[in-house]
Length: 169
Image (cartoon, rainbow, N blue to C red):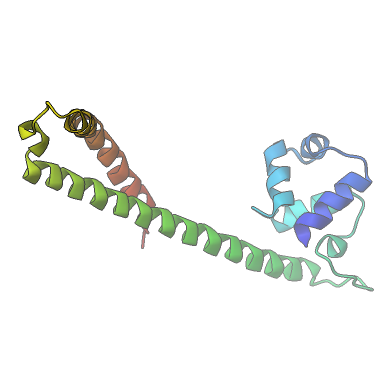
């Protein structure tokens, strides 16, 4: 609701995101995030937006209030708090999902390392006179060679990612 109202009011005034951003002393990406619903302006910024776009704050928030109330700022703050809470919950859910994906990848890489260690390159004992064995042996050897050299770097990156996405109490 807020995101669409900001965009509609901006376009009805013939302003681009860049022009509105300059008037508000913010970067264009901030306007874009507001219009995409990825973030919301704080109450003071909302009042500034309403002044620049010459539209009441209540209209930006999607309400038609007939008389101005002293508690408008409080109502706006409560609505923005709810929107911020929803955005925060979405962000935390995404962060938690990424965290578990990184843990899963670490487990997969570790299991692959253990498997390669325990198998001890069984393809080296194959009869390479058979063309099918030759192709498979080269493929296995290439995979093992690349994996042993690249996987530790990837594993280190995954561990750093897990630490960075870990929920802080």
